[in-house]
Structure formats: C-alpha cells, structure tokens
Length: 391
Image (cartoon, rainbow, N blue to C red; front, side):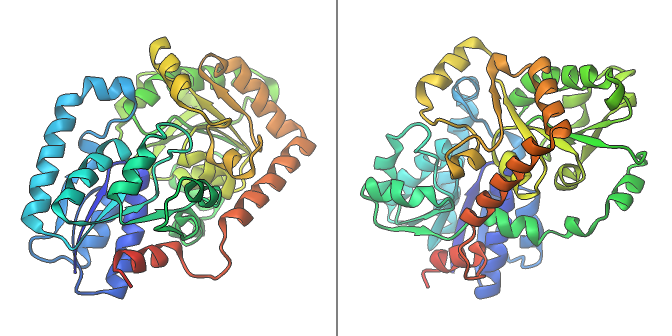
C-alpha cells in the first residue's frame, strides 16, 4: 500500500512518526512518502524503500497565522505546487493530512477532485476558529480522525459522519517515551547544572512566537531571580527542534546566563523536573498537564493588528487544550498585553508558594488525563493506522 503523509509542524512530525511506526508494524510492505521532520524520518530509515521517504522538512518554512502567511504567500504557493506534483508522481492509495489546515486543506480539495482517498488525522481546530472549514472537511475528507473527546459532539452536530475518535496520541507519546527513564540527578549531571529548583520556560516553536515571548520570559526570570527565595532557581528555556541557539540568545545578556539556561532536545524532561512552567499555548500546555507540572500559559502575537485579527476569528473561551477539555481554567492564561513579567511572576509565585492552589490544579490535571483515556489499552496510533490502512 502506498501512503503519502503531510505534516507541517513539530507536533505533526511527532504524531506522524508514531502513526508510521504503527503502519509499518501492521503492513511491513507499506510504501510511505512524506512531508515531516526528524522524528518521521527516523522511523522511515528503519523501513527505507526506493522512491519513498522525506520530501520536504517542515523546518524549511512552515508558517502559521494571518500575518505570517501574508509574508510567505509565495513560498506557500510554491510548496503547494510542488506537493501536488509529487503526489501525482507517487500515486498513493491514501493521503494522510496531519493538522496544518492552511496547507493541507488546499491539497485535500485538489486530491479529492483527482480521486485520491483522503484521511485527516488530528482534525483542524475548527471549533476554535475558521468554522467555514467544516464544509471542506465534509466535502473533501473520506475519514476524519479526532483526538479530543469534546470534538465528538461538535462534529456530530455539524453533520459529519465519517468521524473516528481514537484517543489522544500525546498520551502514548509521553508515557512510552524513553526520556521518562532519565532521573533528575542524571539530567542535572548531563547539563552540568547545580541541584537547585527549576522553572521551565517554553517560548513556542515558531520564530514569531519566540520574538514576542522571549522578552516577557527573560523579564519574568530576571524579576523573580531578584527575590531572596528564588535567587538560586535556574530558569531553563526549552529550545524548539526547528530553531537555533541564535533565536533565543539574542534576548539573554551575559549576566542573565548565570541563571537562565537554554537546552535543546529535552523539553519533556525540563518540564518534568521543574517546580513550575511558563508555557506558550498549544500542544506544550497539554503535555505539561500530563506531566503534572504546575503551569501558567502566556501568549503574545507580534502586532496589535495581528491581535485584533486573532480575537475576531477565535471564538473559544480558552486558548489552551487542557482548559478546553475540562471547560474551565485548570490553569491561568495571560494573553497579549496581560502576558507580561509582572503577571507571570505573581502567578508562578502562587504556583510554588500556595499548596492549595497547586493541589487544585493537579486535581484538574488528573481529570484531563482521564478524559483523554479511552480505556481499551489500544494505542491511538494503532487505531489511526487501521483507519489509514482501511482495515
């Protein structure tokens, strides 16, 4: 069976790699060609076949957001043209789209007209914004695979019938991950860190997010560091896989490097061993809840115009997936101008110093984890693979 997979971001690369692993386990002769990243490519290299493999790395230019897309429209159109030509040359039995709707839905519309079988894994968050995309999902997608329980009723209410809830792949990704075997002691030794408390700081995975969040995170760390109780804390920035040291270090002075550290490739361990985390919204905030680390979400966009556009199209009460799951503030969200060092300092102090506040958050975390479990002990990637393979 020939399968073409399109993933455009780090989270899609992760979930795509687990999906590929399950596909190969169930169908060793599968031929897979894909847009993705290092994680998907690692899985592919174990099953390499002629004419298959990585077409384009998502790190070469994934864009998201109205302003970013406007600035990259030429690249986006070239990539769409390239993708269509590559699909036609490969002639897959099934095309799998992983999130990344701005790009994927354009390909899906074209592919449907060409007669290809379309499977969408990790549905676009149309319940949050751009609900007009529901029409495209209904018209162009043969099977829609969803990963959040609240999406079941949503898509049912919109009249979509070929919808499958498989549980959340983040669960298996986190709890089967080898990095959970690392102890705090070995983590500290690996990076030559003192045995002192840690605050995790996640600035996002895109250049624009980093540019807007790093000044707030560095300002927050500097203010908290001046307080006697926190003078020995280490503030660790989890570098995103698609970024470089230069993306972050431009915002950190030599003096601040004494207590602000940048580490790549260890996001989960950084969060797991932290007393608290300041997290840019997205998949990372849900991972932080699953790892049971108290958190606050902070999110900024680069311009007032982008902010106005954003609030005009996003209709969710919450921006964090964990809060959406329980339909309340399990943890606080500071958006745009409320996301500033002063508010972040106050919230993180509350997370660390207020036992009752922290315990309530962890109780909500437990509820989030229960909601994301199906209970049949079958990994979500295995279920998704069966759908892709049309079993």
